[in-house]
Length: 177
Ligand SMILES: [Zn+2]
Image (cartoon, rainbow, N blue to C red; front, side, top):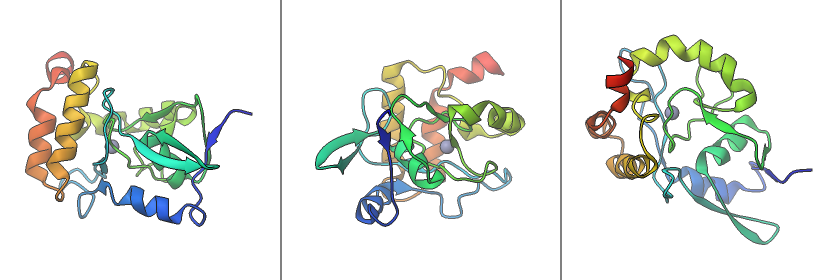
């Protein structure tokens, strides 16, 4: 059986609190006019691939996991297996940890579910400025943007600062629209 990341609300309560302490959400979560839940931003460590890093201990061994995978295991209440792909279906934002069991709400899904959800979300995506602009970025640019985005909200959600970071460089805007 492949190794699995399991996050248990009782057993790992302290660890979950430490995780959530590094996550910043828009106070009402929803962007005015869009009706869509915005990303929840990871503000802890960020690796050179632009994804976050979170340290946990399992069976006495310290491990580093990507926060969006941890968020999926926590919110969906199911193990995330090594090698299982967990995708940002709604937003492409590597440091988004907005997992939620409601398909209308969550941004992060196992790839087995993501195709259907991607179709469902496709129409909304084009209208949401904050979901664009990641896929065209090179690795170093993505890491840089992740760090800028985390820095923009570290002391509290700031719409203007988030907008500034996400819209500053947007290769997707020229190629897709
Ligand atoms: Zn998101």
